[in-house]
Amino acid sequence: MERIFETVAAKVASWTGRPPAFMLALSVIIVWGVTGPIFHYSDTWQLIINTGTTIVTFLMVFLIQNAQNRDGSAIQAKLDELIRAIEGPRDEFVGIEHLTQDELEQIKAKLEKECSEVGVGTDHASVQRLIDRL
Image (tube, rainbow, N blue to C red; front, side):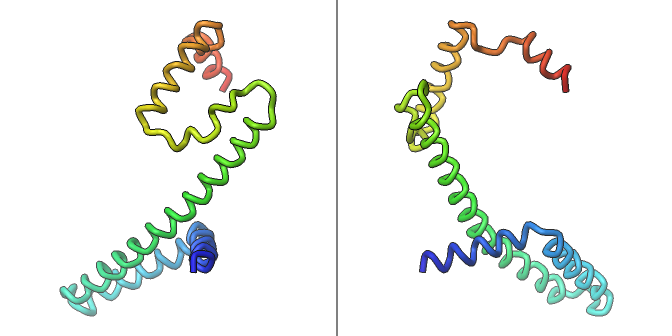
């Protein structure tokens, strides 16, 4: 069941991110808008678009979240492999994505302090030079 869902989710997420999907959605909205005068802008006419968009939005939330979860997991696995394979990085960083936000902020603050102590941190002048080059 999980494999079927992931396959369908990947295909739908891929297709909905393309111009034809946008054009289809825009066409539906245009047709709905044009039919307003025909149906005298009735409650039923409004209910049709409200119900349709609610259902599509509800389902798309799950599909998009599935795609993001898979992408995030793949990126983490790749980063973990780079940390493991390259000399220099600390292996303790493998899996830190499972820490709480507060723990991650503490690590970030310690790393920034550590880098600034050895002169690796960014100062305002170097950031400004970077911006100027762009």
